[in-house]
Image (cartoon, rainbow, N blue to C red):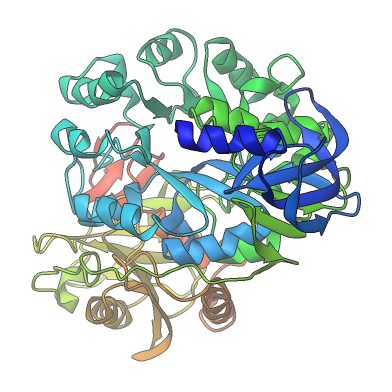
Length: 580
């Protein structure tokens, strides 16, 4: 705020100038006192001027006794996981009461480096949704694969001073912190020097290790696993995020650890939320409603999704209904059984009503982040798998999460030692093909639990480096699927017997599209139906989300990168063949 704005607010509060809008007869959620009060709310230049007593306004809106609730803040998300561009993401989540997000663009930065950071800043600059970014701290996530970029302290320095960059994104490299690795410490120093936040990523880190992690100035964690862990991390100064995404959902799991004494250190986040989940379940409001329906006081839950997040990230211009703050709020008829945003306002302007956006957000052309496919010499031969033994290691899918098992199996091989698919066994081939630097890298392995009977599925979404990942029972369909993704610049595609069964094009870095949420959902609904009904994928898993996490070498136990089969527990590559 500047003195000109402050002077205007003072004059409006004193009744000396006319406000733009007054919301009458509102039941206001007071997140400071954890209470409600009935009042009018006066707005001028997008800010709250006061609650009445001699004030005047040009326009009146009757709230009719509905609850007036501060706009929800998503404390940690990856916009890329929605498959939507920032403008389409804005149109998708505002009707659900989300008015601010703190986004970590490490998905697109793993593909396009600083071009991705610049695109996310530019594409989110003039849209109704407030988008703040955390600079990705771990690009690449590990040195055991090829990503599109390597971002170190010198790259962070170029962006960390931007007022919309709130700090350093999730620090996944706990070993690097605990050993004060020089590269890691240089990254942290960039946040220290600007007095900016550092987000955490520390599943199951407790005790002495947690002391070291928090001593380094890391203040949040969205990977908390148990109520006991939540209490310890809060006790040691962290904010804990109750996450309700698509694959990872821990609101119910952590809720027993939250009480009136520590609730001020609790936030809500979505992390990774797929388009179908946003449409069917909501955005931040889903996690808030689950908490309320399972015993959390409604105003406590609302406070966690608003004021707590604003305090954590120093966003003192929002998160509450109070003079001087942004007029970001929504109206809802109830807060007890479930909060349904009926009218959503940003800077005092109505942006959504009855679940629909009223005006499309302005679009930004993805000029330098599209068509990112540099695949060298790909051919069907790159998918060859000759294990060297009939006794092999197998990536075992565990439904309901992204952790995999370290399995083993006996297989058949032909006279050349090539793996032979057996129709009676649920074992398929999986491959990762490098797409960023034309290295020609391709690695293959075996996977169990996917259920597909015949055909192939490929995607350019493969966390975190986002190379091409493909699964199938035969090399011909797998190769056709990979070639299709190379031709269209990325996305998700399915093949059987040489025929394309469905494709979802993701022209922005192979991760996102400018299609609307409804269009993306319709396409993916059709593709899910095809995957289950025509390809026979197990209905216990999501065919596309499960596949995209099989290349993530920071989640146990076995994963596959473009460099080979990786044993996460041993933190080293491993041979597929086993010795009897």
